[in-house]
Length: 397
Ligand code: FEO
Image (cartoon, rainbow, N blue to C red; front, side):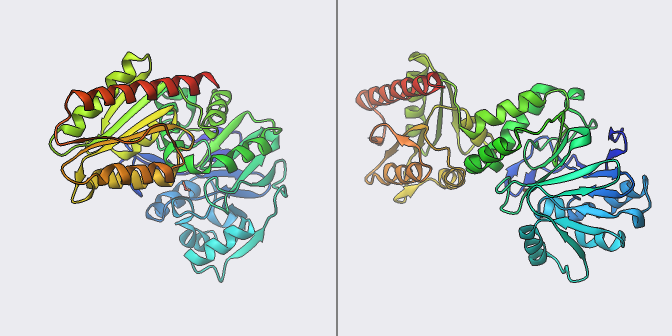
């Protein structure tokens, strides 16, 4: 596998072809933990890998340079998928100074025994010369954690962007123009939806802060390096931070004896007939990772669950809890479901939707046991209303 990013800069990370669960995120295409080795007058590593792959990582570095020649290890982010191997790596690279910001040093000290590590703490905008090339550090809080940082190399117009612009996408290739672009853009969208959607406001500030930098290549910490489609991925991020939507309605439900499913299909059909793009998902049959990505660019969502034991169904509860954390704010929403003698699902779904900061456009559509004509008419009307709202929201953008 070719590893050269540009002259004197090589990829030395780990391609995780088999990972399918990344703290609950369904990584259907695996992932990579990217690290970059810069060989200049000084030698620097940008980030490391998961602890499990320390040996493979050190072998990649040692194949290109003696480990004792590594002068700096830049830690842009303390999360263990990028910094978990640091205890092993700092020991192996005995002459290395760990370069990070103050918040990252604090976080690393809470994960690892850092008492014998040499640190260089850098401030926002500070530079570090490697000889012919320079590293400039930019704080990028909440992309993905408070201590997150990006590293820029002006001589190569290269941004090491950490989690930002990343994709959980294993590949034998290292660049965006060597893989299926549709597939990699879909993974970038899924990554944003599931990892970063909650942090749209700080990410928007980071995009504005980094916008003046001339950038020809973006090297994230997961997935492929952007060199031919930089403008596309930056434009996509500018849309995602604003939760820009398509005229699209997503219907998500869980059902007990198919009554809520019947209602879901009627809402879906109402949305289709009203001219929206519509999708329908059983929350029990679909991984929530997929649903988060579908919601990211939807204008409106219907959430349904039958009432079971005076609450919502377990798969619905798990999914709603996850989405509550991601906060797809501003999108239109409706709750619906069937019940026997207690209407708990409507109230609970409404509480989740409010916590997501979505806009409820009508009271929950509820029916007792089987939906009859009146209930189905109400579902159809809710689908039409959601479609109208999605079309309106998409047209505004
Ligand atoms: Fe890929 Fe936030 O770590």
